[in-house]
Length: 131
Image 1: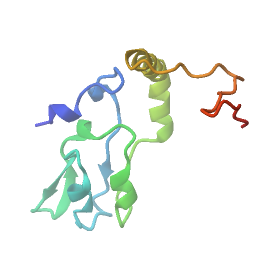
Image 2: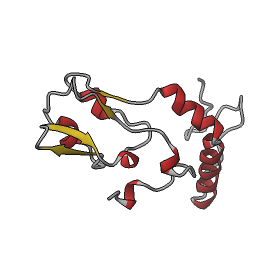
Image 3: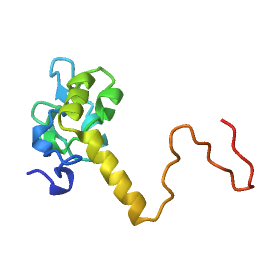
Image 4: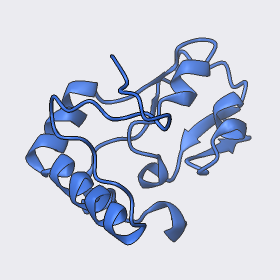
């Protein structure tokens, strides 16, 4: 059963609507278990009968994470393309949502607004920083 801590909406997009999870090629997998023991979100379980890891909780995978694929010694793990993820980000207006949250956080924590384009922020010594 999926852990609700890892299945919350991602920037307002329901996690089950995001196609981002690992796929294991069984013919390439040597059964080392590195993916199953390294994933902090319990996406994998080790099948002791087949002696290979299996993806049992795909929606628990952190969107954009590819650690398991990067560490698999035999390249037996793959993900959907980065371009499909970026397309979803555009279609779901994720960047606008992130910007809104960032602006709300600035107001909530009384942070100084970012400088306008072309403005040069002053340093703490009273001189102007040159970029």
